[in-house]
Image (cartoon, rainbow, N blue to C red; front, top):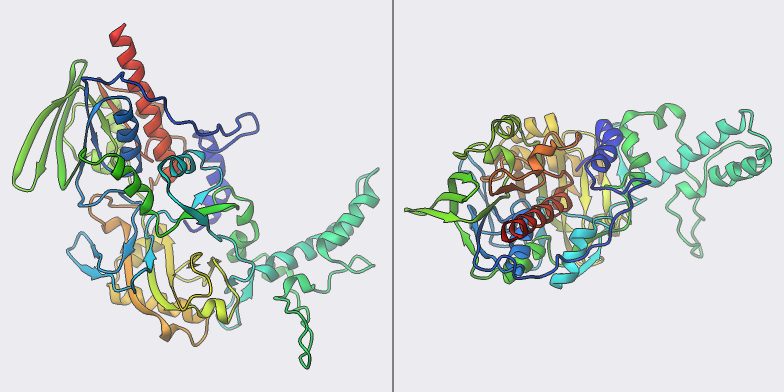
Length: 496
């Protein structure tokens, strides 16, 4: 997601508090599959929702011998872990349709698109299920930042180097702590690329350096940015994002699209998943669960020994249920964030002209972010995300027609890559607040630890998803594993 000042400050701390990032005293635990057993033999379980949380729960419960039924309202698995390809259709809640017209082999992840190296659970399932991964370049020093629409953009490389240079120069003018003053002085001169007098005049580190070519002038250092430019709030994210765990290397993506993970789970669950099954009511007690759902014109009403509710909390709030009042109060108040992406197929002008291979650029208008592809470098065509926004900006953006969203995205690309906006083709816009059975991107409350009551069972019902353990797919998968472990413990106690 785009980094705002608020998320830069709070995001990593909130995820750590939720147990999803390592703390100094809490190292990330290696992924280990839950031990297969036959504890669930002759017991039934329903899983409502076939997003990552539901798929993980169903996979592990099936391995444990349960008779598993997955109810998914959509006609596909994966939930927000979604990949669009040629021939797909994007439908919004107002009935508006967009046909995806990318070339064969091109794809777009409108939902999650990155797997961080500390997402050990998701990486572990990719290994277990045989999902091939490739590196994702999230941080390109050649990406562009538009500080002033009247001036050319600057590169992330220059912004970071000039900040280091200016900061090092200033620090050298302050009293340095003994007994390490000389060592620190030497380090700052090297770190900031200062001259012998401790002054910063610019650096080749800030340039897109080319090796000398006969007959052409050597690369020169660009004029350094001044403090007023470097302290522009629009630069904050670019200066620090590579240190924020959610943005830091290494990163990966499934080869061919993020939905490869969901499809791999679905293959293991063949015969267990019912698509187009819209749950309407659940009732839970200490003896079991009653689940009602609709498939087309057919109404179903069935008993299950156990139940996992793995759907976004705002959608769960609409089900008829008898969950405790404390849980109902929480889920009734839950909201999902607004987020949008606009994707284009285009010739790879960003690689050929600007030497940008993956990464993020910032036009600093309502588009908020441009995101360059990390697959098939140097091929003829690629999918460029020409807008990725969230929050209040995303709410306003989604109120516009698709044509207006395309136009704003094209303008953002043109602002950073003059003359290239006209080369963008076959756009598609995904407004997550308007996607059926999602109605939002991630929990609006993702900067605060989830209430502990949500991770406990209520009767024979457990909740799972990124509303229970924030952190996107990783949080969803971890919440599902927690639910499965708790169900197995319940079975053991019952059998004792």
